[in-house]
Amino acid sequence: MRATVYVATSVDGFIAREDGDIGWLPPTLDGEDFGYQALMDSVDALVIGSNTYQVARSFGDWPYGDKPVIVLSRRGVEIPAPLRRAVESMSAPPREVVHRLAARGYQHIYVDGGKTIQSFLRDGLIQRLIVTQVPILIGAGIPLFGWLPHDIHLRHIETRQYANGLVQSTYEVAG
View: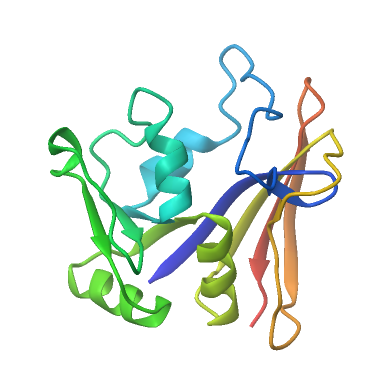
C-alpha cells in the first residue's frame, strides 16, 4: 500500500500553533487548490489523528466528502450520525492500520496529523511527502517532524512556487 502525506507548514516547520490553531494558514487562491483535488482523487482513504479530526469537524462542512476516513485514537472519538457512513475510529499501531486497510482492498492512503505522520514515518510506511511551506514564522507550535530512530533519506521530485508565496515540494522516501 502507498501512503502520501500532504501538509502545510510554517517556514519554521510547524503545522499548527501549540493550541492547535491553524488560523495563520492563508486563504486559498481563486481556482488554485495546490494539487489537493488530484491527491484526493488518487487515494482510497484518509488516516488522520484525533486532533486533526477535531480541527476538520470545526470547519462546518466536512472537508472530505464521502471519502473513507479512519481516525486514529486510543480513547475513541465521537462520530456524529451524518459522518458515520464515511468515518470510523481505529486504535492500532500504524503497521496494523495499513494491514487492515490493505485487507479491504485499499491501495493508496493520505496520512494527516502531526503525531500520525510521525508514527507512520518512524515505521517506514510513508512513500511520498508533499509539504507546502507558508511564508510565515510562528515561532512555536506543533512540529511536522519529530524524533526518528534513523535518518530518512528523501528524493526530491519537484518544487512549485505559487503567486501567494507558498512553496510546495514533493519528495519520495528513498529506500
